[in-house]
Image (cartoon, rainbow, N blue to C red; front, side, top):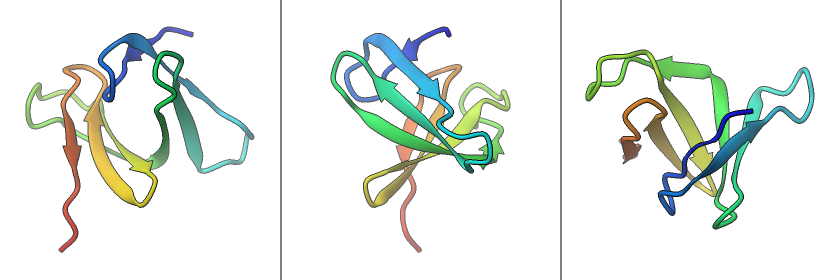
Length: 80
């Protein structure tokens, strides 16, 4: 599987794993800094920065982020 640039350490060592077939979340793990995030497969949108449908929602601890795996934009979702 191809690696991505980690939104935490900016190294090309971020990859995803599907732990169970029926799992709603995909696990992302950086092999350099051990950053771990969970992707909600049902939430994807067009990135406002690069205009491609490659922005996904991550859950990291108790916070949510949008991350574009095309342009590498990483943005905290602010609670309303």
